[in-house]
Image 1 (cartoon, rainbow, N blue to C red):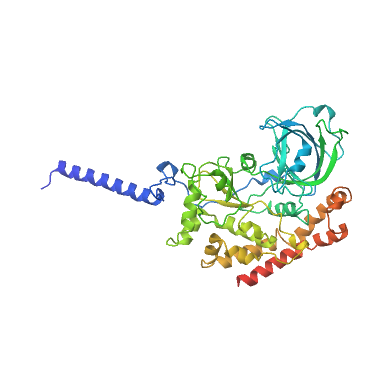
Image 2: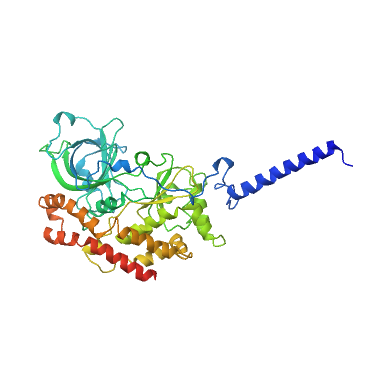
Length: 461
């Protein structure tokens, strides 16, 4: 007979063996590594075990929109000062006109003073003597009127808690309201986080020695869209420690430029040709996701629910389909990943090109073809039942938040702002048609959304 002492020893060994087996299985599932050529950059450590996306949801703090007025407009006065650059030269506001598409390395950052005032107010003269911000050109450098990035310094009074202003002249947008309308439609959606947008009447004064009159000059109507940064995450109730990427030329394939920061061949500039890094410095989570999405030996349904939330994904995809935002299949959208999650939420951001049909409807990309050119979308739509889910989400949006009545209501709120701006220089010379013709086009936007809906359904079937 086996003694009690031996039995206890056998039992102890069994318990230890069972614990080791459980630990091995646990780490095999969660702690796998995709090391290639001895590179262990993407390995998950025990402390990095995260929750899959299937049981998660994106919950935006909708209170951020509580005082939001879609048709509201404010004035912003900007004094631009001569500024000494790192190259030892002094640049002024007139040098901004030299920023061009053939010299991408030249974009001086100038000191500025910014004042926000109501439409019936004037700037305070005493506040313009010292800088509280910087200004530089953003967006299309070849535009006849530039768009600007204004960044307020720490301690300055921001605009509704925002310290970065993206002032867009909308020269690539024939409607002049594309981003405004899109984000106003999005702001009430569940499983989605949008961006606040604002109309601004912009006045700029050149404070360089060469400037003779010392007066503010109207640059007309601009649209500001909220900056995707940590302040955005905090104000919208998201994870301040999360990661944000902006798609530049990204189709969910693991291209050679996508490497982690501790890879000896990591090149930040090359990385950002694919994905601009808005927040975050560790790309291992992104790399794991791309490896799994592109691994045909893995069951895609499990992969999808590990890295993406289906309601967020369907909402994002449906918004872009209804608005005809073909560009968003590979650029202009955001990937947001909370720090405690395995995966990513898709957030819409750039809608500049959605109303190009107002200029010329020939040669526009086909939405269905654009969707199928992206590996993530193509594999998702191949899953059983996915097309029915997409149809249901499209129907839900077009009957509610994107209904003709809601679209018309928003456009009507913008009309007084546009009418006032387009009657004065410089906006009066930017429209290729009369303002009445422009209004007629704007009032057909709801029809365009329905056409996008019906067209896509036919192709989906």
